[in-house]
Length: 126
Image 1 (cartoon, rainbow, N blue to C red):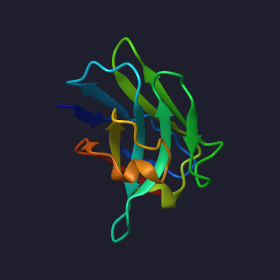
Image 2: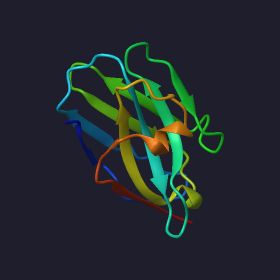
Image 3: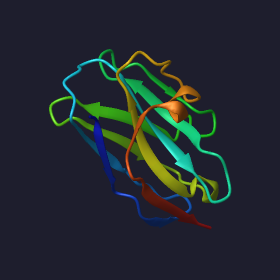
Image 4: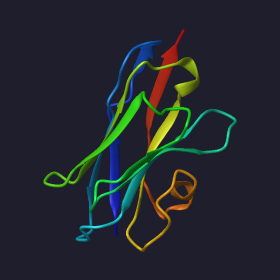
């Protein structure tokens, strides 16, 4: 069973940076799709970024392109999301999600992945 544990969320001012990470365990697959989903209060979950862990291919939501960077450390089984130039509407709970069963690796598909972490809170003040 895949287990995902996020950390690194915090409160920052607009324009600041954060780099939450996700420690993954409980699987032996080398290829799969991992990504980040965020949910603001009262809103639906939104896929932010995804990555094929085998090839390193990445894809981002338009709202974060050029500001966020997803990466995966294969040796440590850790997924990270470097977030720069943060804006107040980036505020939300950020979840790590994973799929190793061949689901579509897209920012839309990631919201339907079967394995999620407990989330880490990111708050951006103006």
